[in-house]
Structures are given as structure tokens and as C-alpha cells.
Amino acid sequence: MIASRKAPTVTVIIPVKNDAERLSVCLNSLAKSSADQLVVVDNGSTDSSLEVAKQAGCITLEAPHAKVGAMRNRGVASSDGEILAFVDSDHEITEQWLETGVRLLSADERVVAVGSHYLPPTNGTWVQRVWAVHRLRGASPREVDWLGSGNLFVRRADFLRVNGFREDLTAAEDVDLCHRLRSELGGRIICDQSIRNIHHGEAKTIGAFFRKEYWRGSSGLRAWASQGFPVRDLPSFLWPLWHFVGLLAVVALLVAAAINQSSGLWFPGLLLAIVALILPSMILSCRTCWQERRLDCLLTLGILYFVYGLARAAALFKS
Image (cartoon, rainbow, N blue to C red):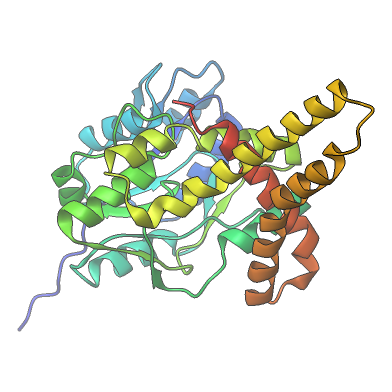
């Protein structure tokens, strides 16, 4: 008689800072899962986040002033699950989230990480709903270059072989980790939308969207440089660079107009610069909306692509 294969143990690691209410929602959703350990790493919260985690029976760690990569590494070091599931405090998992992630990761040794892009809240704003058209585009399952660390499953052994998350990056630590999992281990990363995970912290307004993408752009250039400037990631930097140069051109032409108000020669150049700045966002929106059969989002997605480009342009040199 062949013995049944023992299921791997699973640790879920959750970083948090001043997010007690949403952490409670996250932990309540995880309470229904088969996780062996829940580890909450607190970044010096002044609200009741730590108390919420303790009341839920989580392993709790305190890491004030640490960056998010270091927080997650602390959680890994203080746990022993064979599979590491990473989720953020403002996420809510759906039924069978953990079981699906474990099953898909365990099915193929060549796969070093699985997960999916985040779902918007069911009662989300137009910004949240429209950006989800971009984020959830494409077929599923499929191989991808990277996945966000708010919905990510990795084997502990593989995580340790690449030395975990970089601890000096403000953001883009998940992009960097996935790059090293692929390049150093030769593994595949699979995005499968059956691993469903709702992100309640998704930006609700244009202003919040700009601020969040500005933060997400932090350390991006440094992470790219540390990876040897891979060509496949070049479009991620050309997009903000285009907006950066375009904005400089528009500002320069406006200054020229203010200095030489009697001449109208600057106007055609200014109009051309504005069109060149905006046009790529609308072209990309047309492409995405056509592929996803969501032509109702053509203008609004174009606006978000443009704001995204401005935010990432501002963050180009942010550490």
C-alpha cells in the first residue's frame, strides 16, 4: 500500500503598520484557511494592530523602522512552514486561496512562485475598478516575470537559497525577489487568477493613485541596476522617462512663451509636446480595452495610464 503524501506546512506572513481595522478583516479571512502559522510583523504601529494580531493567535514580531523586505524576512526567520505565503494587512483572502496556492506551487518543481494580481473591492471606486482592467489583463494561468508580494507563494527552501527579500529597498522588493528566483534558480513564476485575493488598500482617488504609484516606484532604478539592467524590464523605465522628458519640454515651452509673449512661434511646439505626452497613454488604453473587451473604460484607463506615468516619472530617482 502506497502511503499518501503529507501536505506541506504553510506559514502566512503579514507586515503591518497602523492598519488595525483592515488587519482584522485579513486575519478573519485567514482564520478559515488551513494555514499552520500566521505571523504578523509590526512596523512600530501606534494603533491597536499588534493587539489585533495577538488576539487572533498570531505569532507577533516587532520591527520598528524596518523596510518591508526586512519585515518579511523577520517573519520567515521566526517561522518554520515549508511553504511561505505572503499577504499584506490590507488584503482579504477568498475561500480556498491558501489551498489553491499550495496545490499549484506543489504541482510542478520547476515553478518557484505562484500568485495572482489583486482583485479590487466589490464596492470599489471607478479608479479601483478601471485599474483592475489593466492589472487583471491577459490570459490565466500564464508565466510572468514577477508577482506582487501581497499575493505570493514561495517554497521556504527556494526563498532561503536566494537570501530572501532585499532589505535596503523601499519598494520593488517583490520584483527583485522574483528576478532572483528566476535567474538564480532557473524557475518559473506563474500567475493564476484562481488564487483570488482582494486588495482593500487599492487607491480610491486620482490623488491617492498618484501617491501610491510614486511610492511603488521607489528603488525601482536601483533594483533594475542591481539585476544588471535586463532588457525585458526596459519598457518599465521608458514609460516614466517619456513622461519626465515630455514634462520638461512642456515646462520649457511655457517658460519661453512667458519670456517672449509677442511671438506665437512657441504655440505649435507646445501643442505638439502636449499631444506627444498624452498620446502614448491613450494608445495603450485603446490596446488594453480592445483586448479585454472593455471599450467603456477607454478614456478613464487612459487617464490612469497618464497619471501612472507622471507618478513613476517623479519616482525615477527616489530611493
